[in-house]
Length: 267
Image 1 (cartoon, helix red, strand yellow):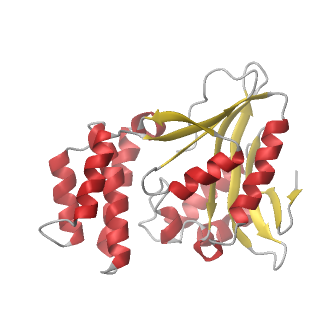
Image 2 (cartoon, helix red, strand yellow; image 1 turned 90 degrees about the horizontal axis):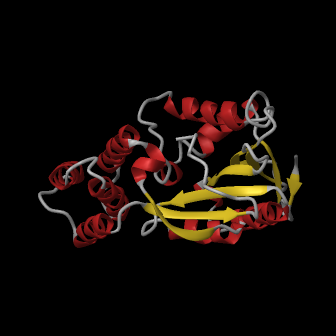
Image 3 (spheres, rainbow, N blue to C red; image 1 turned 90 degrees about the vertical axis):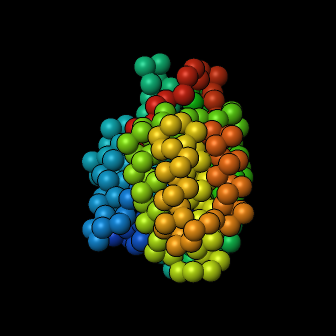
């Protein structure tokens, strides 16, 4: 399945895209910081990209099994891979399409409306399916509202919140926390570090709310990695707001045959 828009070619990813996805997605701090992956080691970007292309690719992945997987976002102008978008979508026992929708776009292509163009097209395709079950997505609200706008543009509608333990599991949540602290400790001082601090505080608050870490542990770790005996007001406010509003924003699009949402099989 190949889909074209005015500026883009959306084609199923293959194992040959592994290196490009590792570079564009998993080596880009501005992108991987909103995902749930750990790229602290030298080979981890390749390993995570290989996981995506093997599970959601066209050569041995979900496409070969009759499902619908991940599309490479390729610019018509120069054939560059700018990111990925798509699904982990299978037919359920009622032969309805169920699964997860997500995307990742390289920072250098932000602000051009490319993901909006892709979202409009994929959303139109989803809404045209007469055998649609439930397609869902989650995002880190309060720090990534642009993602929420894009998901709604695709056709998904807000349906409350989803527990981070339900989405990722407790062990993976702790891994995300450790990776976030690593990001913070390696960030250059200034606006970038302060922005990352707010992001880390947001996710840490979600983990505190579900008893994955304690509030004292979160505060001590944030101060240690930030390199200061105190946190700025924005970070403290973000942590407290996240504790009071547990989980992540949850959206879905549901066909006439949709029942309950599928479980996450990717994280």
